[in-house]
Amino acid sequence: MPESATVYRPCERLYLLALNPPLDGFDHFIGIWFYEGPPRVLVDVGPSATASQLVAALTRIGIDRLDYILMTHMHIDHGGGLAELSAAFPQTPIVGHSRGLPHVADPARLWAGSLKTLGATAEAYGPIAAVPANRLIAADDLNDPRVQVIFTPGHAPHHISYRVDRLLFAGEAGGVCLAAAPGRDFMRPATPPRFRMDLALSSLEALIDLPPSKICYSHFGLRENARGRLAQHRDQLLRWQAIVADEVPRHATGEAQAPCLQRLLQEDPLLHAFHQLPTGARHREIGFLNNSLKGFIQALEEDPPAD
Image 1 (tube, rainbow, N blue to C red):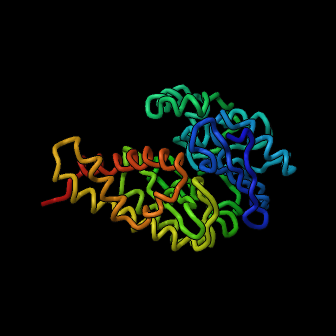
Image 2 (image 1 turned 120 degrees about the vertical axis):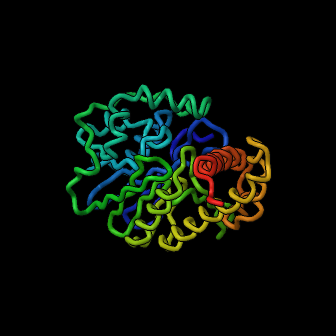
Image 3 (image 1 turned 45 degrees about the horizontal axis):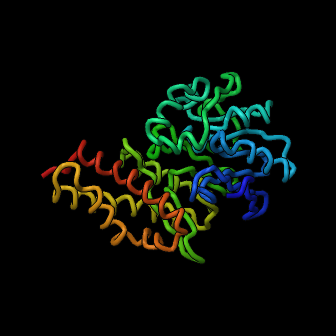
């Protein structure tokens, strides 16, 4: 496994830094975006285990100053390395959701929750250290017309997307989009429990209405036709909801997960490139597909359709 980040420049002034955490199948999965701007921004930072990779990659491309570190959300694979990056760029303000920032200043609960949910994966990502509270800015208070803040709850209640120029840094609000083969993508929801379909759909509509021209996925890469991609993902969420609502009542409580996943892999065209992913990535994605499916099943159980 490579010990350094891979640097791509998919378009002018934009860099994608592909981190390589110590997990099989997780290379070219966690993407950190650097935009030369103005303003000069870093979007997310990845886990602490890869913080040195990220700092080294930024040094390789000559970056010694940032205007902002923009956080889409504080999950460990996006924000676990914030303490290390804040130390490397001590003058840079860190922007995030007001509900997420307290977990950056005092990450004990975030680390405990990550261990409970992700287990060995969280351990491989590395522990989360605290960031001084005076470095943190709530996105509501960001006063820079060059950065448009869009609150996009769904993947997480504290999820934010950012529009800078014609680029949309969507985090996981638009799902996960992976290149499986030349010209063919694998796209899936990122909907862990507790998932709120109404919030996710409202967030997607807000992003579609902007509209940006390019979408920057955290997982993984730059795609043209942002509005079309977001509309595809909106339709995918509705497709999953319909399949889960049809399949779950056919099974005893707790036994619908596997048949639902089988149907989704067969019936969702955006998943059809699954078998073209590398072996390690397929193993990783089965875990994430199941976790996203749990979000849909739990949502159905909490709010069953009316007869």
